[in-house]
Figure 1 (cartoon, helix red, strand yellow):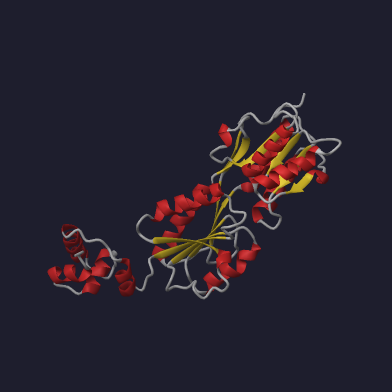
Figure 2: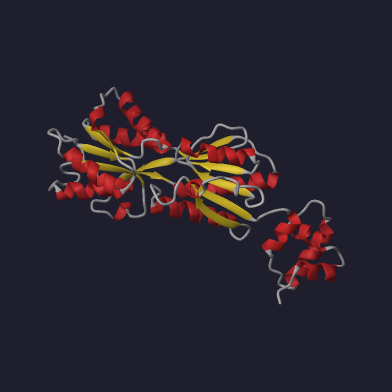
Length: 333
């Protein structure tokens, strides 16, 4: 049989509540008593029972990681990196429950009994009702990828606008002027911010933009492929295409090759994300490195601190983006 808190309490001659508090570092328990109880726990190879602990401490030992959606528009790379880094921070302190916001028809099950803290990977304003439901229930929350201007929310965002500016400026410096974009989902915050950063590069360099070359995608391979097919039908083709993520850039590259064109000889392509396969494509993809895993990692660290301190203070943290220059962008002579 496994050792329980009651077993430790019997040996230490204290109550099981005292044992539970001592093992969880409660300031209500003297340091000498904590050391004695923890020593007994180690000697008995005690393993915490989260269900029992939750009853004593009024905690669920669950952290929720919620995405806008799981079955649509959340790429495998995006999902994997965030889950991996969040899980790496919380380790075995909590259970990680990963869900899509659209999995819930109502938010009654999102409460303090079921979640000690929540991380939301938010894409658009459509998530706001979910986020403010959590705020109203006073559950510690960190929002990733979007800024929520509320006094109780910590926001962790990648510097997408800066990254898109770097992509646009690099193409301009390489002599490109007729530059197309394959954008993401139109109501996603990332799409709007990247578009703004890209446009700012042209404004900074006093270069006119052709808005007819802005084509919508949905962050999928297929949408990148279809958008590039559309661009290649133009009488005057673009010399370069900025894709708002690497998946769409991959689709665009396939369409380009199928039309008998060379990259970067005939047309240049630049992506956004720096997925794990970007360096191994032919040609290797020039892209903006967006460390979404670091966003998840910092978000989890901040959430644990908020949960520990019992205080929630508005804060916005930006994670840097970098331009990774490879082989897919040529120079216009």
